[in-house]
Length: 162
Image 1 (cartoon, rainbow, N blue to C red):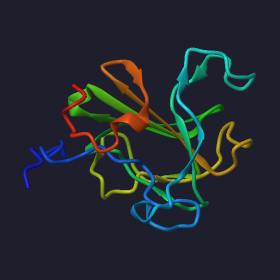
Image 2: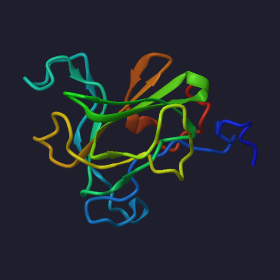
Image 3: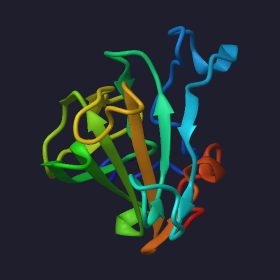
């Protein structure tokens, strides 16, 4: 394999969901998809919790479910915020694509760490303002600074967004 020293994607790598098991802990391939409990609706008033819209999706999964990066990349931020709780941002495609993960109960990576799709980056939780949805992952993707629906990139080749 050729990672060029930074785990940047092989030409056959495809974007995947950050959660691999659903609410019954069965693999997604067996049809037990994580429940989408919050849909992509940027820049529009949804409710008091999301007055500026919802820039990603919320995936429901059981407590302690591992979270993986959607593609190979480099961790560019690990932080804790009042709204997002424990969060992580990963740069993909040489910085042209950024993925963001929030409400984790535990973060398993550090800033500047190289990751690929086999390395868990965190654990499902309900930190920050996720109490309404309970254990879930808030997940966003930006391509060249533009908010995109995370569901439409699943299965697309890495490097196809830039």
